[in-house]
Image 1 (cartoon, helix red, strand yellow):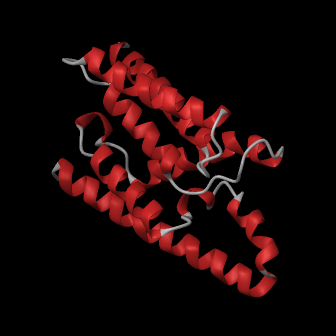
Image 2 (cartoon, helix red, strand yellow):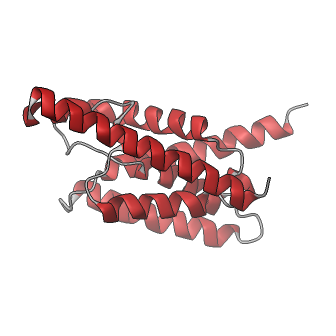
Length: 177
């Protein structure tokens, strides 16, 4: 199967999961009222698949589709995407629970994970990749500490850091006998 078809398949399944999570929160709000929605939005198994707007959803799905195309990310199946999204959400949960930032929803942390793998995995243009991820990190750190833009910048930073760590793990695994 080609890289493009694998990317499209994984993105398509992720779109279905986003629809299912949105349906689930809709049912909960109908049954328990709108005050219960924060509990679902902080659920690490669902929060990555919820989106506030169609533009947020389309942007995340576009990034996911493109970030899954390079060979470095071709082995990321819908199940691996789910695991990564859940891990990022679990790592971010204490920050949310303490009220240090707003509740994070959407799969953008996973998108940043995959983007950092793409950029930092550039072999021929390593400096360009490091510059790109450095610029993204600078923007996200500034947003985390400075501008209340409505984005959960901490999730993006966690995604980038885990992407970097995963590359180190992949390289170690490749180099071991």
